[in-house]
Amino acid sequence: MKLTLAEAAAPTDTLAELQCDAQAVYWLARCPNAGVMQLWQWLANGSASPHCLVEEAVGSRVNQYGGGSYIPLLGGVAWVRQHDQSLMYRPQGGTDQCWQQHSQAAYGGLCADPKRGRVIAVEEDTHGQRLVAISPQGRQVIKEGADFYGAPVISDDGSRLAWVSWSLPHMPWQRSQLNVATLTSLGQLENSQQWDFGAAVSQPQFDPHNALICMSDHPGWWQPWQVSLTTPRCLSSTPVDHITTPWQLGERQHAWREERQLYCQLHQGAAQLYRCTGGQEEALLDEPGRVASIAVAEHGDYAIVQSATTGAQLIRLGENRSRRCLAGQPPLALTTATAQWLEAPVGHAGETVHGFFYPTRSDDDAPLIVRVHGGPTAATYPIYDPLVAYWQQQGFHVLDINPRGSGNFGRRYRECLAGQWGISDTEDVVALVHAASQRYHIDQQRCFIRGQSAGGFTALNALAASRLFAAATSLYGVTDALTLASKTHRFESGYLGWLIGDETQLAQRSPAYKVTRCTRPLQALFIQGGKDAVVVPEQTHAMARHIEHHGGEAQTLLFDNESHGIRHPHARQTMLDRELAFYQQRFCGA
Image (cartoon, rainbow, N blue to C red; front, side):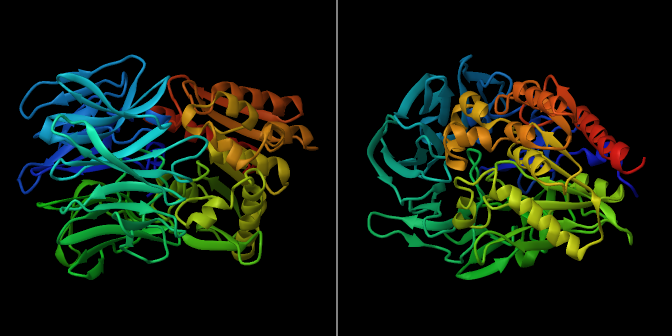
């Protein structure tokens, strides 16, 4: 059966932020009607079905990308109310309480401190960030001085606090520090220590014996390390990434308990989940794909996963690879082809670019849609995406590309983009499309490219630089890097200098500049949120005017109430319908 427009427009990130306490499992699930994230709970080992615990939108706005927006505490739960960033608390069986509300502040990365009846959080306002403790008695600043904070975690006995910090111009995956301190009986920090491995650290946690474990990529891959006062010890030396790029606060993709450990490894861009018990490692997923979150409790092991044949699922992992799906979609009866690994040589000897190719069912040459992810230090995965399946059913091949600079392939691949954004990513797109054309039946007169956020920058540059692409779609994409550098939010304010260079390079690498150098008229569709604080709407409108001024055609679809990403189901359907028509009306003869 063919997918409906509503089914095709459904997002893939429908489950997130998995947590456990002694009695229950918690997670965020996207409301199918409103597109916002709500907090759900399942009482472990009980007969009741999962239920929605907090119906209002839950979400952090720290760094604009949020994360760590709720935490179980003392049998109840604390959460960040999305619309005003208030920190709320609901005791078990009680009514909602507002613990903290400030019109200019955002909260995220929540961490429970049950010994002191409070929440540790990252607080952000116009003056910067700090770690704060919040309880019914008020707010206490416990650490400040760094530009950014993330991933606070408390040991099981409540005696130690660990966190990650970093400073401009770095991003947290470029250069960050691991910190640990003793918590006094009054909840203040003493004996603070810091480790700087010369690279990046992420997702610290304590094991039951208070040993501190974190992910560090100083050897070239995100790998787990046990940190001590003497020599750090690597706990899994397989030369692959064990976590994804830390764009959000509060991510959890590994768990270390006394009798068992859970962690993932990314091979060729696909994540496999492993459990190690008594020194014996067991792969838990039938199909590698994406591991979004992991949690371990006495009552079970849990993970949010996605694969080539399922959407997002929350699963309880049993013995002998058994599992129980607690939330999400059942396995799909697919009629479209799944991802095929594709790579091509680029750059220096031995370098390659890679991606996933999804062929349509056609014996004739078929049009191609190339998708470029955001970040640009994000990644695409070989998982079921209803949008891809919809395009396949409409007669399009689809190519999901991970250009140099993408996450999940080690530090070296990620840092290939240093000073090269606007050059190497364009080369990578062209090289991989040529490689696909040699293996598959592609109509080279009907190749389209789309990109979201940073991917829009690549898509528009590729459109201007190469006759390979007939048209492009930019979803809240970067069009003027120089202007963006002066107007973007604080979290990414130093990122463009690393990606591109000085002001002259920022201007000359941008699509706005390259359109003026292009000798042919261009055709592009722009999709933009009116409340976007990352890529402001003025950039999109200016780029559309640039294209029209130089003889091309630009369409703009603006959603007044959307931000950096189109979330509401009706808006997503409108967006997809317009994009498909944009391709078909011009080049498919429909």
